[in-house]
Length: 238
Image 1 (cartoon, rainbow, N blue to C red):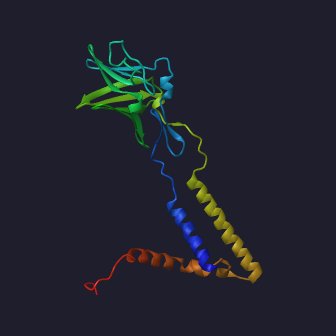
Image 2 (image 1 turned 90 degrees about the horizontal axis):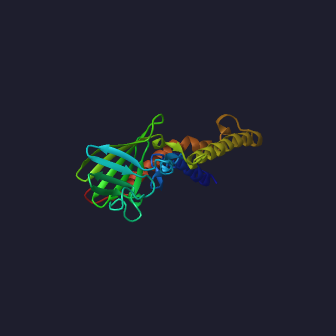
Image 3 (image 1 turned 60 degrees about the vertical axis):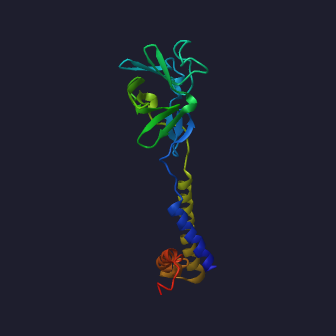
């Protein structure tokens, strides 16, 4: 019985130490949205539904056209950006147009400090940095091009982190609540039972008090065993 209690308690300590969620990864929902474990995330779909869904930004002699979340036939029928189902990002310089990406070639990458859209089309890679600006209008700001790599900034109120899913309590939080509840029942209930049924006093009121006193040495022995169990003695070491 005591051995079984030891196994259960050690497993509980293991879960408490190692069962926690990672909140730094933004899980992809669509080509222009993702959500963190806490329910917050980024969603550019309102831009695709707005009246000015195609954004334009100019740098030097080039004009960039961006339609987030969905493909759109851009420019005129003779343009490469008009063919097929359309494109999501296109750049025009004079009479020449160049497709930089479609929605199916778009991924959103985000962590707690930065968020950006990445488009890979043929040999071209484009990064669109999402800059939150709750008090300004939506702007597409081209930054430049180097070795087939394009950089832009999308400044918009819709580039801010928002609540996408009401997650409630996470799995890690529930595990901690269960752990402390059952620990309280174990110690308080056990102490009362030992006091009234056996007349225990002082340290003897703690359930399995001998185990708890030996726990530090048991942990030390476990760590030593873990690091030494795979070592093989050889004649040279002897």
